[in-house]
Image (cartoon, rainbow, N blue to C red; front, side, top):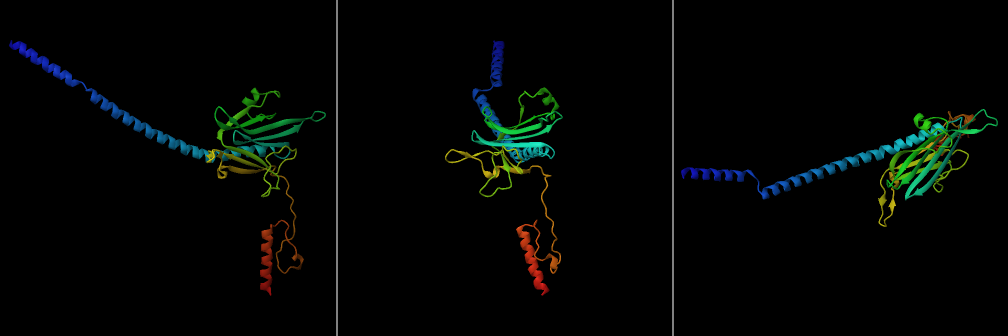
Length: 286
């Protein structure tokens, strides 16, 4: 009888110990709730940090990338439109899915020893932008063709005159790409030409590019702020001769040989300043 009581007491102690080893449902739910709250807070902080870093990176790219792209286009213009080549430039602008899109074609030709001499394209570079409906963005492309091999791997695979041009994507996310011809006759009323299909070369090319997002107006339309477009003017054939007339500069105010003469190369402001200097020197001499 005493042994039975001892066994019963041992069993009750064991059952009590077993019951205390586990967790109740309320404790488990409390732990899961706290864990989910902590995890959600960590994910929220991570998303904020990632979005901030992405915004900073995008901002830096939007400021530096347009200058790099415009520099590359300017280098192509300087190289292909150099003196000594029969070069030509073609410019077109259009509206593509609400974006200002453009195409710039630069090519130069050379004449071989064939009789009669036949012009062959030595180098041809095309810069153009197109809207990609799959990406939902405007992409800037560049194409190179001609007898001069720029990329030996690509140009060797694409060797042959009947093969189409290979357009390589350079940058995506453009919101503006414009190319305009400068003729030297631009005024406030007359803007640079948005199309150029002539045989003669323009005096310069005005390039415009932007990666900034467009702003939505109250009527639902989207516009791009003018200040967000990066412009660059590139001179065509920088070594072309500029006419200069040499005349004797006014060194002595009382020199009879220099009276009534003005330098035709001076601007109106500088000529006006020289007249004021004459008056001051004349009054002081008297």
